[in-house]
Each structure stands twice: as C-alpha cells, then as structure tokens.
Image: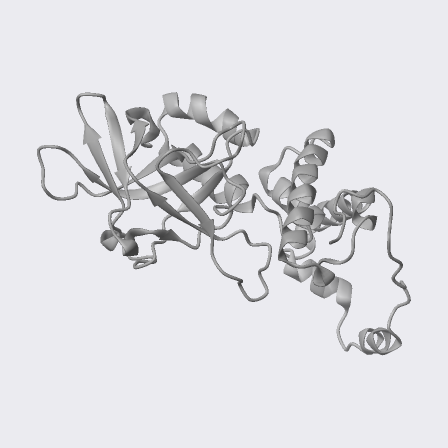
Amino acid sequence: MVDSKSTKPHYEISDTKNVNLLSERESATFNVEELTQFMFGGPDNYYELNTRRKLIRLALAHPIHQTHLPIEYLDADEHYSVTTRKSLLAIEEANRLNITNDKHRQWFYSIFANNHFALYIHTSMCLYALETMANEEQKREFVPLARSCYITTAYTQTELGHGTNLQRLETEAVFDRTTDSFILNTPTLTATKFWPGALARTANHALLMAQLYTPDRNHSCGIQMFLVQIRDFNTHEPLPGVELGEISSRYAHAAGDNGYLRLTNVRIARKQMLMK
C-alpha cells in the first residue's frame, strides 16, 4: 500500500526525455505556438492562454506532486486517496492564491489534481444548479455552504432503469402537509440511483431528481430537484434510510467514485426542494 500521506519522495523516476518523442515534436510541420493560440481562441485571446500557463506553474510547484507514485501505478483505493487529498489541497491553494474567477478555479483544480478533481461535479455543475434553480432565500442559505465545500454534492439523476429519460424516473418525493416536509423513496430496484460521480464516498449531499407527488393527486406533478443530506457531517456515515455503495470497477476511471443510492422513507424539509 502506498503511503499517500507521506511528505518524502519514496521513488525516483528519470526525467530524461524520450529521444523519439523529441524527434517527432521537432519534425512537426506546423507552428506549435500558433496552434496553441488557436485552441484558446486565437491571438486576441492570449490573456486566457497566459493565465492557464501561469496556473499550471503555480499548481505543479506544490510539493505534493513529488510525494507519491504516478497514479498509473496505484490501485483504486490508493488512487482515490491521493486524488481526494490533492483535491482538498487544490481548494486550499486556490483560496490562498486568491483565484476568484470560476473558470480559472476549475482549471487550477483540474491541473492540481491531474485531471481527477474529486469535487468537479460539485464545484461546477451542482453549484451552478443551486445558483440558478434555488430561490433567493435558498441561495442565501445553501450557496455559501456549497462554495466553502461544507456541503458537497453529487448530481443524482441517473437510475438503474433510466438514464436521461427524465419522465421515466421512479424516485418519489411525496409531500406531507401535516409536517410540511417531503418523504423520499426509491420504491423499486430500477429506481436505484446508479452511477453518479462523488456519490460512493465523497459527497455528503445529493442534488436529487425525483417525481413530485401531493396527497390529493395519484399521479406525478412532474420532476423536481431536491437538496438531500445523505451523510452525517461528523462521521460521514450514511443517514438513517440512506443506503450508499460503490459500483464495480470502471475502465480507465478507477478514482471516479461512482456509486448508487437507495432511499427508504427519508424525510426532508420543504425548503430542500429548489423553488425558483
């Protein structure tokens, strides 16, 4: 087992560049710098290219990049451990360096974590969903917690029997007027939430897509999104009624943290439904 917390290098890999690779690069028939500029929007957008190069230098200068084997040499648990540690450090470093632009922060996270940033879905897709689908009162409460990563989320839509076919989703959210709350269930095997990234080990909340039911209607009122706490803040253990697990190995995606979720009579406050 590789010690992912070690602060001392325990390996030595030659940094000698492959002569065949150097030869191929030098024999290119195009200007590498011009192509690079083109990929970033052309010479008029050179600021973004220079910013990315600066972020690469800042990210890769951190000593953590010299304290473990390359991820290709790690098993799934070791890979996850290293990736998670790098991801948390990436957030700390971005704050310390005062990187405030959201796009530049995502670049920095990705570079720092070797394109395996454990909270990518949370800091991009889920945070954007909260900012655009929550009402003003909800945003004041939830967005600061999500930005600070006190709340970490997994986008939980896909079900075992249903992928992007939203109208066929089976997860239920039944409104209970007497307690002003929702009762969440995955009533069938095919309703099991399956595949969401960061769900198996990392996230403490799920941004959950479910069919909304009210007591006076025997059919769905449509798909709604809910912010659901799934793990205890102190122990990180699943909350009562929440079953979580990791799905089997994924080819070329060992640290993806993809998981499944089942819910049994999990009750949440009405304000947990995004209401914009």
